[in-house]
Image 1 (tube, rainbow, N blue to C red):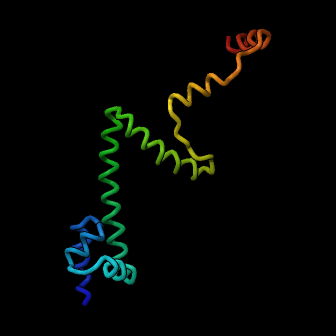
Image 2 (tube, rainbow, N blue to C red):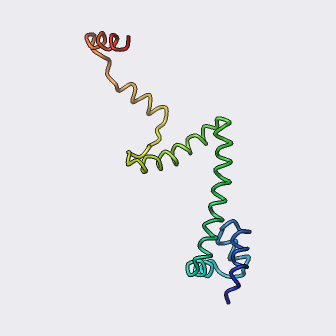
Image 3 (tube, rainbow, N blue to C red):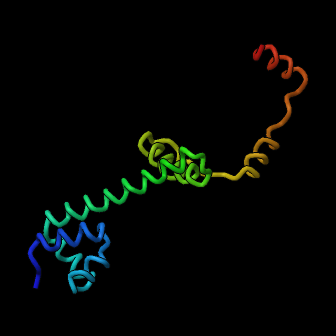
Length: 125
């Protein structure tokens, strides 16, 4: 038997949107919880809010790491948010590459012939 929505909502918030924890707390299976949520717009909204709060918390931790110069946090941010930015602008997706790949790319660029080197030097000056 399905409990009152207020009990399910409380379980959703206490479990921070984790379906397994919600099911365990309510003494039902995960598919049952999914079914209740699928059939009830208010429960869907509450689950979305609970999961958004978790994302907000994770983003706050990520920002702290970025502010400390954490390279792994920066790489994650570029991989995730850079991809979203590219998709929003219909740009090619950001593909992370290693410093070895960057050096290979630099090494693959041919030297300027002497006559072009003069033109290039004049353009930069």
